[in-house]
Amino acid sequence: MTSTMTSTKRSSFGEEFMNNFKNRNPGEIEFHQAVHEVTESLLNFIEDNPKYKNAKILERMSEPERIIIFRVPWVDDKGEIQVNRGYRVEMNSAIGPYKGGLRFHPTVNLSILKFLAFEQVFKNSLTTLPMGGGKGGSDFDPKQKTDGEVMRFCQSFMTELSKHIGPNTDVPAGDIGVGGREIGFLFGQYKRLRNEFTGVLTGKGREWGGSLIRPEATGYGTVYFADEMLRTRNDSFKGKIVTVSGSGNVAQFTTEKVNELGGKVVTLSDSSGFIHDPDGIDAEKLKFVMRLKNIKRGRIEEYAKKFGAEYYANERPWKIKCDVALPCATQNEINKQEAELLIKNGCICVSEGANMPSTPDAVDVYLKNKILYGPGKAANAGGVSVSGLEMSQNSLRMSWTREEVDGHLKRIMQDIHTTCVKYGKTKDGFINYMDGANIGGFVKVAEAMLAQGLV
Ligand code: NDP
Ligand code: 2IT
Image (cartoon, rainbow, N blue to C red; front, side):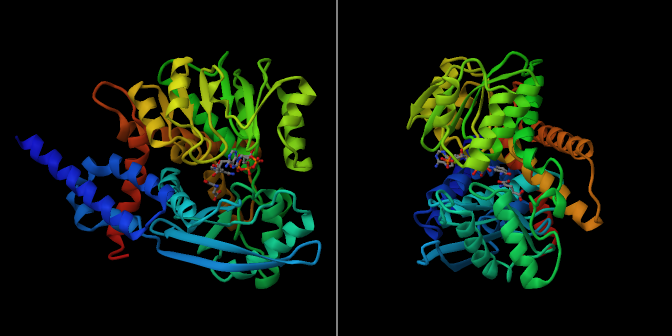
């Protein structure tokens, strides 16, 4: 009787919250998806800890502290004027300055940036470092643009953004379409406008305030996290067949670390299709991919031509048999049917380098089959963790060695794993890393918000 009443009360709180939330954010389906997942994980926890419910912490955490939207006019190489839209979602500053990447991609809109900023709050809390959450970007498409066009766009974007950020206020970094080249142009413009050399951005070049290991950090961290999960079952990457999606920053260094740990990566992809190389993408082939993607800015199809691998146009790699799957491209890139296919083919572990790459019904498939599933906010937190370490080094005006930074990164990924186990272990011993990450990330931010009064 009591338990029925309690569960009815629980589901009605969840339903009421989600209904109100959706009404306030109509049509923002990615934002709905991210908040719904967290709410499902937190319902029981919040009912058991009424202080969070009474203080309306979840209602406050799902409302951004501030959103800035601005016009970005620039001139292309033909002398024609172009207009894009720029954004910065400042989601939560309870435990530190807003921190999170900038995404330049034609699909960027408010729903995508709000979902990413919301996820970032929990992720940054899990890292153990003092960083709040934010995300920004533009619908600008860097593909087929010259360096000059990208620079003029970045300068115009930063001319407005510079009014809202700062090393103790909001510290952006890279994400899809924003790498070392773009961070350089953005930093240069900030410095001209403010006449200040500060750690206002992370992912900077080594010679001008960047941290060693930051380029590698997200990919390495995703593999370290998967390795920690495998250890709970006395297993490792040795001899494992691994499918990776994407071929950008995260996918490249994920591949490098899997190779180092004795696994074999057999796929990579981009938005046009994927390649399958059953012999494995070894260090030499990876060097080709890095040149192809980071310098030539070409398509992954060229890998197939160069090495005689199979190319599948307009398809995703999840139909290829694997032991471990590491999605490193974008949101909602594994659906229910693909998750079922992964399981059918013997996949035992999914560790998310990308943000929210699995649809909710794909996640249900992983959890039902009790495979090792590391959600993005835990598994890909290595990138922002080393961003946090870059901020520390900038404040100290020092730089640490590769070994020091990699050591910190490894320890942080282990700590995140421990937090997930603490909050996500179920009675039968199964670790629900999704619940663990959501609850573990929530507690620190919620406690800070309670302590700071009505913020
Ligand atoms: P990059 O821009 O370096 O690479 C993105 C890769 O994903 C490219 O291969 C790109 O293909 C592919 N991709 C992008 N959009 C789509 C799409 N709609 N469909 C299919 N493929 C797509 O970005 P990152 O490697 O930095 O980011 C990859 C993922 O990792 C993102 O989800 C990002 O949010 C997440 N992430 C990144 C972090 C970082 O530090 N960079 C930290 C934590 C998470 P194409 O070249 O055709 O566009
Ligand atoms: O999604 C992410 O965590 C990032 N794109 C990195 C953010 C950062 O501030 O380094």
